[in-house]
Image 1 (cartoon, rainbow, N blue to C red):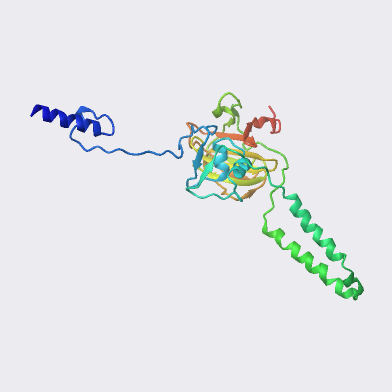
Image 2 (tube, rainbow, N blue to C red):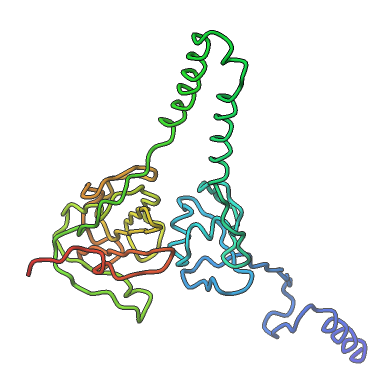
Length: 280
């Protein structure tokens, strides 16, 4: 009987998918196959081959680019997106080949080339001049229709300080968290847009920034305003330099302050280099 019992034990041990601790003998064993498709922590290394990010509710293309310090235009081209719109559950590649930038200029030139061909037709010239006048008038009306549909992007008219509070911590390139300015002030102090642009993110989905506003500017600049008490703008809003966009607070941090950061093509730069000199 002992020999029969030992044989069964050995067969059971060989058939097990992995070594089972002695204290779990007699309990059902289940093996789970795990497939990792994304890393949800802020420590995700975007340089790792095959890295990708799964879009979550509240994300925007610009907030994802900001989180992983990438150029939004490059991220857009790498994933072959035709617009800035993304949807929850969509997987975005953070590394890989990037198609070249499309050239929109020849498209506009082709439309312009069609107009002179119509003017060069010999037949309307033989007809009375009355028939020639309504044709260009109709074309001018059609060309003026698409212009009001597209909201104009405000031109850069310079930079200004978002608040007048003191600089608590200056820009430094040593660490990722220090590549910004930390500005002091009282809770509720109006936070103003440092330059004209369009709001591309407004929310609290980026860990460590609290209530955050990101504005896109001409010249591929992005400016960010974090730790706000409340937000006064939403994604898609066009703002002018000096317009109030938020109120200072302490969300995501230990004291009232403003996290002020500027990036160009995904790379942080010292905001002081763009701001007017302060009177001291």
